[in-house]
Length: 104
Image 1 (cartoon, rainbow, N blue to C red):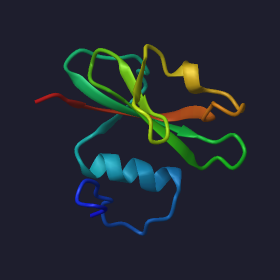
Image 2: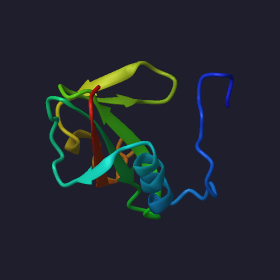
Image 3: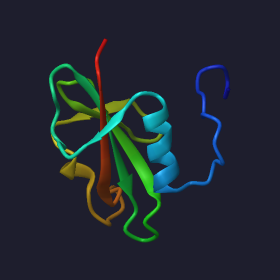
Image 4: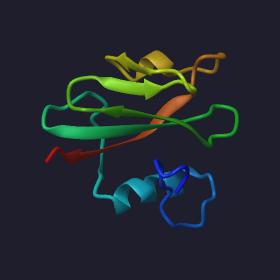
């Protein structure tokens, strides 16, 4: 636990796309090709940097909109994943994996 609020699952902790994907699979998410929001599903989208192809950001959806945490600031709502794609200063690369699980 980090400060009692965050938890990183046990794995080999290498910062790779496959490890990030395995973490979401382990907590009940399934991979999907649908990059839109889906009513009844919470989703996560993993971005990878275009410089090194390593994970750089995760956006999450509550079924209505996408949300991203930008540094220590507040969550930012956005209606598409493309808004943060690219290789400029405020962009995170490209979305390479999207996962979903039913909202309980």
